[in-house]
Length: 299
Length: 299
Image 1 (spheres, each protein chain N blue to C red):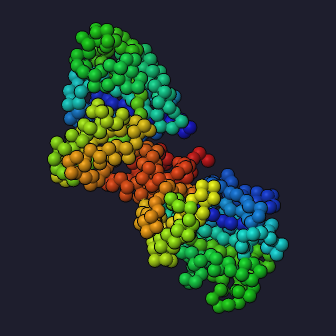
Image 2 (image 1 turned 120 degrees about the horizontal axis):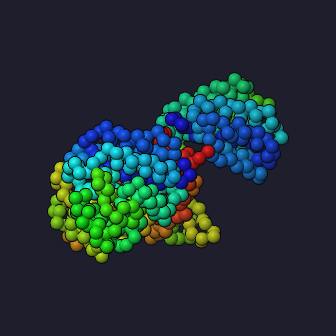
Image 3 (image 1 turned 90 degrees about the vertical axis):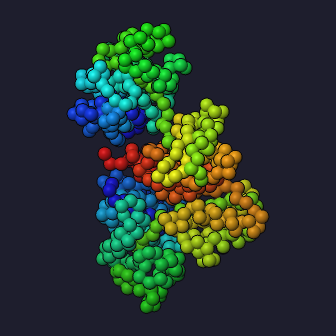
């Protein structure tokens, strides 16, 4: 695949596995699409699908999956712990290869338009948002499915595409583009979660810290230690090593040190290369020098 | 490709590009084989081919290329700056994926046997060597093509496969298995190459240093600095970070510091992961977490 976009659509179904299977089959075994993962949570009554593929193919398949969700999910009867506003709740597009964030924004708008034409109100969010108060998914979703009819009457909560009121059974959907998230945790030599939380507040963006870091303190019961749990929202601008070293700097104030770190889930190779270049002072390194990259190049 | 071996055969031809092309065509566009690189040096009158592929396919193609070399290269007329003993001079096999060093040793012996049956004396070298004095390629090649008839009369220089005297026009060939080499250089805050050389002698195996490090001091004229130039001969046992930190430790004696490093040519991803795990203290990291690895997995 020459150009690759990732998509992680969330559907408001997690108990009826036949419906989940119908949704997933929109992505399975399709040319130009690779289904990486999917998982359903019964308590949340929600499923998350992760796929990558050629942008045009992904667009067609995602729209197809929304039709399936529309046919089989009725939010008027949906109960689950996770907040939700639509049968397909949120569709983020993430640039992976030969595809920029701007390309992902454009793709999200194409998909938004197509879904609007199906009769679903669409809110563009994150980097695709039409106004800054609509960037944050939680802000859009506030009030959930039940609150949408009233909320959408407000001028600042008009939909970007589709009807001006929620679809009766589907609700509304958020579509947008964002960078890949890197979930990066730093374990401390203390069990005091207040210290981890104080450090997180210094390191994260809203606390005057690094631009693309979200974070909070977490207590790990089984290891009896406190952790600074972070999301790096743009690893090309705020690298792993910068987040780690910033945690170290703030930790000194408490006489606490870093005892380990962990990366949760997927991480782009470039995020690791940036940090190894920093720690080892490697000059002029190119990803083409990694043997495995050579092997996976198109022949 | 499920199992992958790398092979870097060297041929004693670098001026007659038609012959080079005939050799390279044994590997180009063949199913189960990927030609990564080839280059010819006129002064050395020598060509180096780098390919990867399925072990059985690589074996067949390499034997084919030796037949081509036998038909078109006559060492009695060969002149070049690089020492050589055969029309195809050396054939190293390097384990890459789902293929161990032991597998590579077995493959080298299969190829050695096949070449012996073609009438070429074969010396097994490196990890395939039949005795420790035959591990080092330079030791086998000493005396070169012209000296082989006499050398092979000695009991310690009998061939492992094939005739007991060199092939008239081809000479002899060395076949063996080794780990991928990682060429790793560390630049110092001094232009004094004697310091770089002294450090290299401490860090390398023969000086009582790290088991899988070869090294020497080099003066970089254009940057006016001295460099510890190393080859890591088994990155799974002696990681990049260990070599770097050992250089740092030895450099302290001279009041010298590390100003940068470089990796020359290809490096296995695992070698980088090992070092990033060390510097960032990452726990429980799996290469499956690297997005690009997920993408290149067989569907």
